Structure formats: structure tokens, C-alpha cells
Image 1 (cartoon, one colour):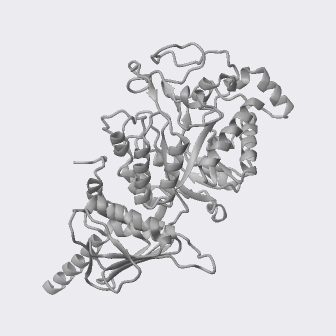
Image 2 (cartoon, one colour):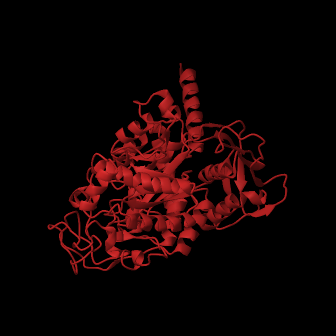
Image 3 (cartoon, rainbow, N blue to C red):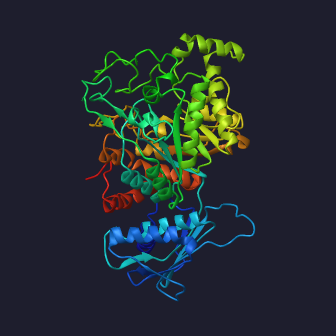
Length: 540
């Protein structure tokens, strides 16, 4: 009996030690330990790769230099003490272009991907096998990994309209996305509280629309107004710099230009975009206001506001001009056009809008919104682009080629998939990282409660969908709205560790997910957070 107990204990120790050796998030599809031993990475290790792998080489060397104090040289070939990056040239397109293998023995580390992006993801797994304490010699357990993502779209969003973040920090945010094998950065650039992208044809969008005269203090409706002139914007050169930086990390930047609602900043700059250009901007009476309140102004509080774009030829020409410049800056297939929370009061009061509804044979203002969205979609389609919109674009009839981003729960995504439209799931209850992470949150948040465990529990494919319609779910993303996130420390506190949970939701096969094992791996992940010198919920 004693021998039997001893054998079980030994078996458990082996199993536990093996589990300890693989602390990768997101969890790889398969990982095994075919041989014992370790590879020791040091400054004498060389990288063997051709120029097509330069992005992986640069990221690895930048990471090693920043956190361990050394870089690796490259070599044409080597027989031992090397890391190789290899992306074969395929005659036939592979089934999964993001699949890779990582093979580590005592002499070498070999990473091979079905694309340069896949090889980059293999390199990200390697980084998570490194010790979390800086040293000149870094032992890595011998391991063999075969891996590929579950979903094609794996995203993070950031709202820079409510609060503005510098180019340097946007790059850091993109690195956070890359470190989690995500591939999309949804950049929310315009809203009621600020227009953040330079448009050369309409300079007032940034000189006027990029700055507000104050911001409410505390949770809505606020305890006052800080009276601080606040804002900022990205020049087109800075946008190009960010897009290039993201591309080098195999991340697509999807810009969002809000319409027809959430457009107060643009209307403040060019009042004729409004149904009632001569009317002063309305703002909640219970919220303190700073400065002049006559004419069109940028909102100083949060919420939904009556002023929306008028569906006039002037407005459509304006938006086409804006989108032309946006498309020159962003090569992404998708352009996000918002479409959410569009109040209809102005359209109901507008004689022009009511006449347009009659002329176009529309039923109501919801169909007028559909008409608006479809005009924009058709224009973007002529330029080879496609739109993404929040699930309100379903109201009044969905634009023919649109992708729906489902945020008001899952219903919008289910309806869109059943109509054979592609879907990105981002329901508030699981994917809104501006919600509190604890019931006893002592900082101001927008409300809601979305724990790490709840994020991890999410499955982006709703059970209501048939097998045929499940294929329309492209993936999901985490959303970070910044009404109450005014600095980078708070931003990091809100996204970490939930971004790690979401990365596993999006990458790892659902039958491989295990919450208990995830929490065990999170202990090592939090040590990496410390190495990265970031703020995070649960930091001690």
C-alpha cells in the first residue's frame, strides 16, 4: 500500500512539474515533453532566419534587450545554440495560415509557421517560456508545441475620444495586443467628446473638434466641472507611424469614424452637418458646464446626445472626403462606422428628414438610419473596403455586406449570423473592460461587474446558432471605453489581467480550456506583468 501511495505521489509530482513548465497564455493546442533537458539562451545564442522574418527578429531582440539586457546576433546557419525562424513557401495555401510549431531541445529552438505571422506567434510562446527574472543565462525546458488559433479575429479596442493617449502609449498598447497573440486593434477615433484624427481637407475637425472646455468631475452627472481645456489629436504622419508599428507586429488597425450619432465634435467644428446648425448644443442640465454654451460645442460629459448628422448631400460629401483620407492612412479591409446609439429626435423634427423619408419610401427614422449606413457602405465598397458597425445597424434593415459588432448582449450577433452576415462578438457582460473587476471597486468606473472568471467563461459562438451559421462568427474583442480612464495606470489596471483571459477564449480550442489550470498559469503571467512594469488588478 505504501509503495502504491508513493507511486501516485511521484506521478502527481511529475504531472505537476510538467504543468509548471508550460505557463503559456493562451494555452497552446498541444504541448509535449518528448525529451528531458533544457536549452540555455544567452548573448552567445544566434538567430538563423532570412529577411522575411525581420519582424520576429526585431521583436525578440527588443524584448530581450529591454527585460534581460542583451540582444542576439543573426547568422546564415548554425549547428547548435541557435534559434531559427522558418516560414515555408507553400504551393497550396495551408488550412490555417496562423498555425506554427515550436520545437526546443538542448541544442536549438526551431519555430516554423504557416505564415510570417504564425512564426511571430511561435516567438511569442517562446517569450513566455523564459524565466521572469532577468539573468544573462535563461534556461528553457525542452518542449514541442503544435498550435493554431480558434478564431481569425482576435481584437482589442481603445477609445481615445473621451480621454486621449499619446502615440508612444498607443504603441505600448499594441505591444500588449501582440504579446497575447491578438491580431486586431480597433481604434475609436471620433465621438461627442473629441475628434482625434487629422483630416487635411477639414482642419477644424481637430483645431476645434479636438478640444473641449472642460470635463465633469467624478461619476455622471458629476460633482462639478474641472474647467480644464482638454484634448489632442494624431497627425496623419503619426497615424502612419502607428499603423506601421502595428503591421510589424502582424496587427491590423481598424479605425472607427462614428456616424450618424456620437458626432458632436464634428458638428461643433462644422455646424452645417447638423439638422439644426443654428441651435445651441444641448447638454444635460444636471451636469456642470464650463465656458461658453452658445452655438455648437463639444460635449463635456458622457452619454447620448440629440445632435446627429443630417442625411444631406453636404454631409455625405463631407463623410466621403473624410473616409478618403482615412482609407489612405489605414490599409485595413474594414472601416468601422459606428452606427450605435443614434437618437432620432432631430430627424423627427427636421422637415428635410421627413421629406427624405417620403421621397425614399422609408417607413420611419430607423429606416432612415439604414439608408444612411447603406449609402456609406456602398461608397466604401466601391473603394474595396467593407464596413463594421455596432449592432444598431441591424435596425431598419442591414447594409448588404456589413459585419456586425454585437455589444448589446449576443442577440445582434445571433440575428446577423442567421442573416448570413459576419459577426464579431463583444457583448458588454463579458467583453467590456471598463466594467469593475470586483464588487468592492474603489475607483470610479462606468458600472457593471465583469470578473476575470466571467471573461474566461465566455464562448463567442452562441449556442442558439446552427452549425451552418456558426461559421459567420469571426471572433471577438475586448472593448475599453475611457469615460473614467484618464491615465495609463488606470488603463492598464482595467485591461490586466482580463486581456489574458480573453486571449485564451479567442485562441484555445474550447475543449482545451480549463479555468483551474488557467488560474495556475496566471500566477506566472502576473510575474510577467511585473517584469513588464505594468499596473494590473490584483497587484501586490
